[in-house]
Image (cartoon, rainbow, N blue to C red; front, side):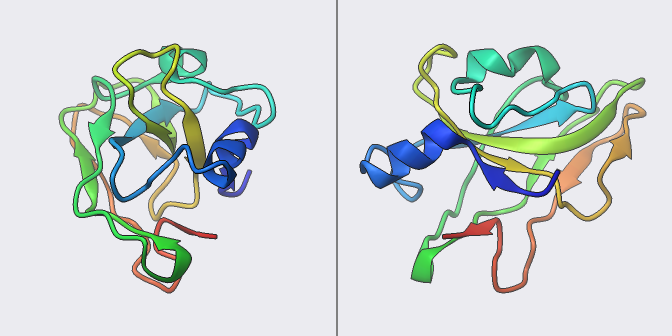
Length: 135
């Protein structure tokens, strides 16, 4: 699957319920066992069971210039061995898994999928024109 936005996430963007620059946008590293359903999965609680690396990481140094979303690269430390990291899911963190809205599924990451072996996993967002994603 290629990078995509979750259907309800797109709706929230269009209805001005999401500010990528000002909201607490976080990244969740997910395993190859996760099968994205962009039209059904809506909240963090729908995907938490597939999380790797101890949970979500907040995105920092976020920018939204010219409709392009970017942030600092993100790392998960000492990701337990025995899984395959397949993608990163971006969501708006509300502090509650049942209301934290899923926004984007990103799987076109250099080096992914990657077998976990107890080492750190760093996601280096694309430095090209589209960065993390572009609207």
